[in-house]
Image 1 (cartoon, one colour):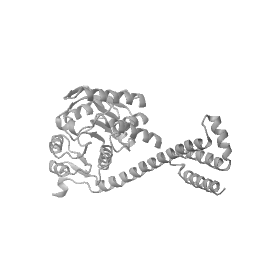
Image 2 (image 1 turned 30 degrees about the horizontal axis):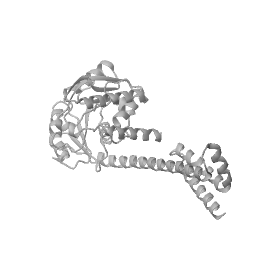
Image 3 (image 1 turned 60 degrees about the horizontal axis):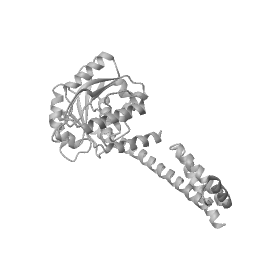
Image 4 (image 1 turned 30 degrees about the vertical axis):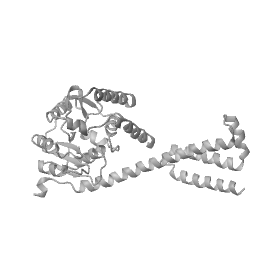
Length: 228
Length: 110
């Protein structure tokens, strides 16, 4: 299926990103009319910067986590008639032009989900520790879900309407990335990968996930399994 | 005798509670149910616990009861954690609803 730019909503979860969110949103609105930032109860001026830059702003009144912010963004986009959603990070790690790569891949394969892969694409400024932590995450994902992916924790994704109708993020914090993959497999959605570039700046590394957070993510996923 | 009645009563209360929770967390409910039934039998027939303790390789009946109580407590803690997760999900739904109702755009405030 071919999507026009009006069919697509870009969803950006954000928490205390006042220093970069303006430029990130301005870069997006030049190409995509429908951009929504979900402000996860930031204590700075993130929401103001978003509104100044021309995107929609949906604000959580308490901090829930990135996973929750993404699902709020999905619900908002669906309410506005989105045919597809692209998730995009607020910290400037992603390139706007890589969204077109996701769209092209979706059009080539008619898949339900396209996941960006830094290991099929390129990275700038990635440490060895982060590289091997991410590789371990991919291994864990393969073992637990059977998904054969090269990059299981990339925030740049495209979800079609079919995927949006099925996927419901319940992991509010960082385990949502694993949950999305698990649900893609569970609902037998057709998934493809596309090469993208991730740029690690001092700012994005400082804001990013610590390696020790992986233990907490594992605990959250195990608790979710017990609930089923 | 009084203590036996008290123990059986407490175990019955515990059973009633987990029976009500069985749909929310079936595995935890099952574990706690088995532990409570064991607790009731042990309270009424205390000598049985010594025989059972020797059979499973534990020194004394009292030790066996203690270990069993640890298992029950662990089950109850897991149950509370699962309830917290459910409450958190409900809170998320409420916060999400409020945020979606108050979405803003530059054009709507101009």
